[in-house]
Structure formats: C-alpha cells, structure tokens
Image 1 (cartoon, rainbow, N blue to C red):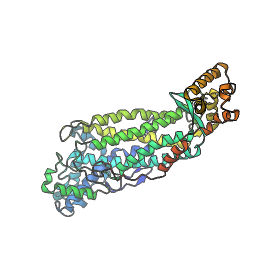
Image 2 (image 1 turned 120 degrees about the vertical axis):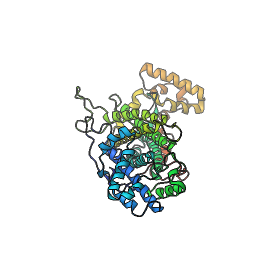
Image 3 (image 1 turned 60 degrees about the vertical axis):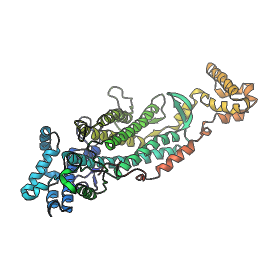
Image 4 (image 1 turned 30 degrees about the vertical axis):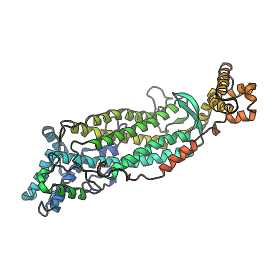
Length: 484
C-alpha cells in the first residue's frame, strides 16, 4: 500500500495497492509499495501541495486577493505536468523546483494573468523541495509503521508459542548454556518496538519548510511570521519549527540513523535464522514455496534467500546513513552540495529498510521451527552445557572454587572418555556425597534452567501489546519532521 498521490496535496493520504517494480531484479531489493511511495510522482505531488498551501496562506492573510488559492490549487494536479520534461530542465537549473514553479506560474497565468504573480510568493526552491520530501517521507513512514506493527505481532506469536521451548544459547558461535526460543525471539522483538516508537513519533508531528531565500522570510516583510503560521495551520497535522531548517538537518539525519538501526536489527534476525537453518544445525527453516531458495546447480539445495536479502539491505544501510551524516555540515544559510546529497540518499534508505521489513515479515510469518532439533543440539555435548548449573549447585556446600575445579576435571573426563557428564559426575564420590542421582538428573534438565527468561518475555510482550503513541516528553516543534 502506498500514498495515493491524487489526494489533496499535503493532506492525509489514502492507500492503494501497486504493482511490482519492473526490471531484472523484480522485488529483490525494493518492493512496489515503497517504490511508489518514494517515486518522482510522489515528490511532485508534495511539491505542488506546498505551492497550493502557500497560496492558501497568502490569501487567508489578505496578502493575495480572493480566489488566488483556488486558481493555484486547480493547477496543482500532478497529472498536468511532464515529469521527464521537468527533469530535463532541472539538469540545467540545478533543482526541479525552478522549472516546476515556472510551469505552474505559466498555467495560472493562462487562466488569470494578474493572479500568477502570487505563485511561489515569498518562498524559495528549498522550501518547495523540502516540503515535497516531507510528504514523500511521510508516505514511507506510514508504510514502515504498518509493516513494523505486522512484524511485531508475528514475532510476538513466536515468543508466546515457544516461551518454554529449550534450545542452546550460543556465544562466540559456540554452545554456551540452554535458553528458550521464546526468549530469543523476545530479544528480536524489543528493538523493533523501540524503532517503531521512534519512527511513529516522527510521523505523528511533521514539520514542513517555509523560510524564504535565506531563512528569514524577508520577502514577506512584517507578514512573514503570520504567513508561516497560517501555512503550518493549513498543512494538516504539521507543526512549526522554531527555526528555519534549510541548513539545520539534524532531524533528517536522525530519521536516517533510525532507519539504519531498524535495518540492522532486521539483519540480526536474518543472521540468527540463517545460522540456525544451516544443515548441521537445522533448528529452523525459511517458509517453503515452489522454486524458492533453489540452486542452478544443486537440486537438493534450499538456500535461505530471505535471510540473504535482509542481510544485503542491512549491509547497504550503513553507507546510506553515513552519507546523510556527512551531509550535516551545511555552509552558512544554504548548502553547497550537502542538501543535494540527501535527495537520492534518504529515499534509497527508505527503499532498503522497506524491502528488509517486507522480507522479514515473510520470513517470520512462515518460519518453520523444529523443537526436536533444538533439543538434540543441546544434547550434542553430552551434558557439558549444563556444567555451570551443576557447579553452582555444588558451590553451595563445597565453595565456588572447589566446585569449579571438580567440574573442570569431570568435563575433561567426559570428553576423553566420550561419556555423558552426568554419568561421569555420578561416579565421583566428591560429587555424590552432596548430590543424589535424582538431584543430578534434575540439574541436567534444560527445561528447568530458564532463569529470568519468563520475566524478560513478559516485559517485551507487555510492551508489544501497547500501541505506539507520541512521547509527550519530546518537543513536538523541534524534533519532528515528516508528513503524509
């Protein structure tokens, strides 16, 4: 679903389904919905929306004569403009706002020559383009928010279903101690909820741009602040910035960073699933579908293609975020290149994050889980992964150092003799003097060695059950951008 760019400019967007992107790579790296939200047409819609709202503000403040807003808005239909022609002119002009304003002015002049002078009055090209991108990024954030909500519910379902499913925990890619698959998925879920809250805050109170040539709205004289306030009031759901943000790009950079963090956390999920799906591990598998994950050479292969694509996005995102951060030091009141670097970069970051989200939803909603393999992998070391628990039980009577020494000795014997650690310990008088056979058996049950797992899961599930709301502590006028 993407913003329907036929809706009234800069107002609440409707959503419609779109087709897949054409091309050799299909939807491997960008899905049709996000591609549409980030399209040239979406930006054109937002830019024309700026001009319509500006004309409305000028008329409402009695600067432009009655009827100006309707005349200008009537010419702000994206279908009236040739995107390719604007693009060709932008190559010479340096940005697409200049030829667009020229074309809009000509269309208004053809209907009412006297009113044409109010088109773009008091504004500058950066106002048009920044506000256009506010619309575009808002459409993208709506998609991100919807997808994160859906993914959160899918991961939540895994956490609930596998709260007590034992599996081995791994550190440094080696077996550590047992955990549950439920706590593992809860740890996947929590950072996704954090990103959803942060991005939801940005979506909830967008900030548009109307600042004039050097940020002071000097062309509007004493009316500048009043026109800006009216402009913001007419732009549905928007807030006013305390300052012009032509060269203060911290909000844009913060948005980029959060998208990078989100994509990295999706990559964490994909990395875990990919490792758990290895032939020798076999604890999970990607969803099955005819032709999915095949090999051109090996008919037996079932490659983790979803994990591959998610990780590809996670590896691309940091470079895009770095570009946005490196563009922060703008020169004086308007940038010499830094602003321009944002134009292709941030939409691409949305495409990368959106694609990773779509692939992760498919992965998690259809994930195949094999609890019997998880249990079998716990038993691979013949009880060695339970040595910590036994050592702690013995420490209550023997002291920590002596208990640790006994378990080291027993672990070496377990490996050398290829025997289960429980059997080795059962033959050691220093152990059986303090632990009965029944007590030893209980200590080797991984299902009862869960520590605070249930509490961790419960906290994350409780957070998941709450819909994200704008954080009241965050200053709505200073730290928000993005409109849909």
